[in-house]
Image 1: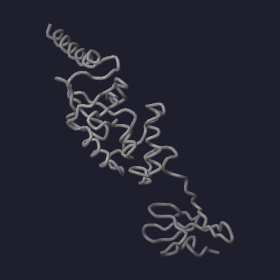
Image 2 (image 1 turned 120 degrees about the vertical axis):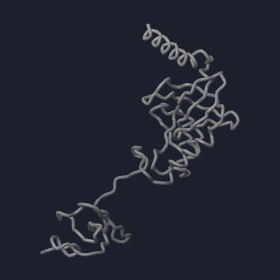
Image 3 (image 1 turned 30 degrees about the horizontal axis):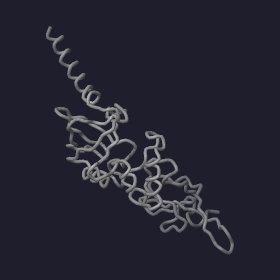
Length: 230
């Protein structure tokens, strides 16, 4: 009997939480109840207090740098400044994502801004096209931010966006001479201890070091370093 009562109580609690947004939404899928954002967990992720319930949500259509990446602190500060203690208009885009977060579109009426679009426009985050399906306003905001090279677009950091930040770098770069065209240049591997190795050496690109066409240090006794072994 005790187990049955516990089950019924749990079921009623889950039902109440689920009905909180289904009952109090109008035809436009926006919240009508009294609500306020009381905590920011990470950029774009926050806790919304609705009546007696606390619901964790994520902003729709925008992605942000992760902890330790360039721009993380700026995106966290931006989220806190824009959302803490506000009562935005919320449109649910997805009931739950892979992290069990409600995905919502936020409109800040007092600031006359859409949170996601404004973040993309300022280069605080980037447009999540997989989620929005190339949503026009977000797409245009990102094109503008990239053109102006603001925020994340000025760092050159690879945020794992294919084709956005990094380009393949050849291991044998060339030096350009306007009179003679491209002149091939040999690239040496200089270890953190200052040893210079040529391409083909067993120590080439082994351990810590860097590639350079103008090496400084001690030549390898095996490959000859700057002076090839005959």
